[in-house]
Length: 153
Image 1 (cartoon, rainbow, N blue to C red):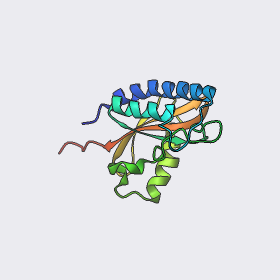
Image 2 (image 1 turned 180 degrees about the vertical axis):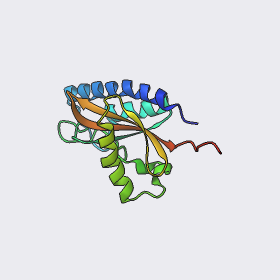
Image 3 (image 1 turned 60 degrees about the vertical axis):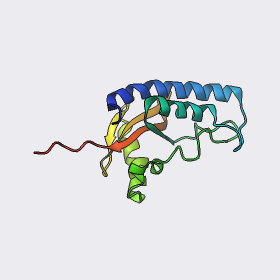
Image 4 (image 1 turned 180 degrees about the horizontal axis):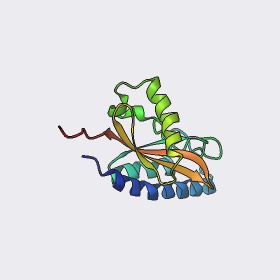
């Protein structure tokens, strides 16, 4: 049973701040990474958060903020895709891609705190915008799980 969406949303609020601080520290450090290196500090923060919160995290990097000074990715190669999760992979297609990349990002732009979203397949995620000085930089997704079925009538 996944944690309550409100618990996840509160955890993500703090995670968003932690990610931003980690990016700033990484950029200030100007660390170089190669594919053989361990995960970047940003990716390690997300891995640790997944373990602590008990949810999976996906990041849509809308502006390239999750890249280092030399353009190297700070996120793991599969971090930006939901389709690695069984609940999203089932029936994954162009409609899913368009829905998550466009529709959900537009819907979540209306809130600074985030929202619980249920997609057209009945998959729920907590969606949190990551902004910097009022500019949308990325979207953080926590989940995904099937929405509870309505009680029988």
